[in-house]
Image (cartoon, rainbow, N blue to C red):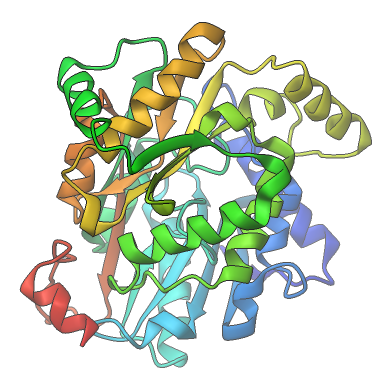
Length: 398
């Protein structure tokens, strides 16, 4: 077997890296090939902001006949790699491989050795050289078709990872909810109780006021997650940039905000699932494919949506804001009778409070992903990621 580094200048290697999935997933009706440009943008320093404070490398693996049988990438985010409470930790991802442990081990070894050379002592994978909502985790349970930019892998990948020595660092749960299901009685009561306070209000996003909603998003996000392990505080321009990227696909009725005395206290943002549209594109996204996406979204031909983020600021948790968001959305979505179901963005088992909220609103665990960790020192005790708010987690933030 022979490893080959994939560089931006090597068009043939880049193509081989992308097209390996056609072999791995041949005949799998659930697989939807990611857009080539989405994968390539991860490894382009001009397109991926993580190159400003990190580095990445990728390889393909060929057999004795020169046939590509595997691929992998390794990367370091300098903003988070050395803040890990246990040891400097890098990442590996975009792993694809035939069902062969020797081939998988060679790919894992290559990532390990490169990361060691960068001063790392462990690696997490399969993860993304980018934000956590994309290509993060190894699908362990729930072999359903993936939503846009979510991983989907063969069942044998878990065996390859475990045989090498990876262990579960944390589990990620994706929940499912039918849009037309009635709001649970407890949330009806919670909503009625909450709305006795005239200071609370709920509304869906207005795309003509994108900067305002970006600012509101930032405030809620920072209050709800900022400071936990590798979740960094978001800046206003970062939030605005995110909203601008989402604008072309945002359906206003799917993005809801809650306010108390006009201060943002919660949000629930869903987007149409683009994988419903790009299935069959085989990774391509030229003019014809773009027109099809535009036309499909404009005509509301998609019926599945994806909940990308849900949060309530700590000071208003337990007061019924979650009920207000769900009930407020139902007032608009139920009469439309268009959206079929949604998948919620993954929630880590390190965040039991948010997982309980998601299940309380009717979410059912639909898929389970694992973020795995491999310690280079095989004699070092392995520790899982602590729960949010735990003593260990607080120490890591000090």
